[in-house]
Length: 556
Image (cartoon, rainbow, N blue to C red; front, top):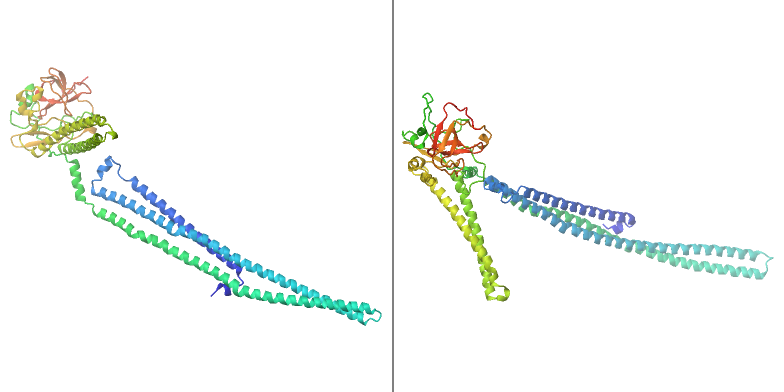
């Protein structure tokens, strides 16, 4: 099966077919190129998607990724990033192994095709030239034969005419001979041309054209083989990344299987556990008996005198559970005393860790400066050692400041950690809470069992049980409530520095309004003006209730 023998007369059709083959190859190259662009675009979109949902550094989102479900999601994002990388690999390999090679092959193919068909046209032109020469010699031979025949006829006519002179007859005879000789020469020339043409034609159809068409056939078959190989490569490029993509998907599955609902539930406990215990039962308040309370009755010391726990939760407005609900919208205390014990401990621990990291960073910097100074001392040409003294002093001062800061937070942390395990014991850290504020020693015996109303925790002992109160944040519920009416006045017996949240500072001898009397927890709620109100220890004030007002007297 050879194009040279089977298609010897299909030069033009072969030229069209081979051009079509090259067009098909270029179309395939374009297809692969567009596929690589799609892969790159897809990889870029996957990377952007993964980046979009990555947690932002130093943000609240980053803290959420301690949960196993969030960790699994983060692993999914990372695996998708690797997944996108494999699509980039597909694009790169298809470009290098297919499009680039095929583009180079197409150029070589075009050049080879051009050369082969150029040789074919050249052979065709040679045959056409030979054919023209043959036709020319044939026409000349035909013409000379006709001329010789006419000259022979003229001679015979002159020879038969008795009226023609012998000289004219001789002249006609000579002319006939000349024409006959010319015809013979033309015949020989035509015979030679014909023989030559037949030889050239034989070589053309049996040697030149088969050889050229064979080259064209081989070129076309190479094109077909090459496009087949490229298609295999196309599939192999995809197949090569399948194991890695499989690993990416396996990583997602593994991350999903690592999700532990119990662990996440425990993390929620660790994140929000206050360290308090639930409050005890609320005692029945008997309103059937007239309440005749004097100033001494409202004092903390007398409320404990009968040996009965008078701890009451809530006030007169909206059935409040906790006495420390009014929060000052100020900055967070440095010692995080506004937080429950467990959360406070975590915040303090976090702060201590941050300070230790900063200290280590400063120490590393100090060591680097010290080494540089030693180098300058050994090699003065490199720099002046004295120029580093100021920086070294500054770093040392920073280290000292950070250490003092760390010690302060470590002390608070030790206080919290020492309190948490022993909150059920009888002795409390706040036993001497009022000692430094001018309170009498008799008040300490009652105040020692509770902490200031900052929301940390409040405890009160009774003869048989101990009630622990969780300070709950009711900002949103009570910020917008109407001011409570004044139910009397009070006079500050001692100066009280209300440093904790929910308390108010008073000066000895100051007159203030009472808006909520002591409910048995040792605290009285007072108001200085519309914007300043809070709790003070009942033993620090002398209360004068306005019984005629019955809640109708308001503060102006």
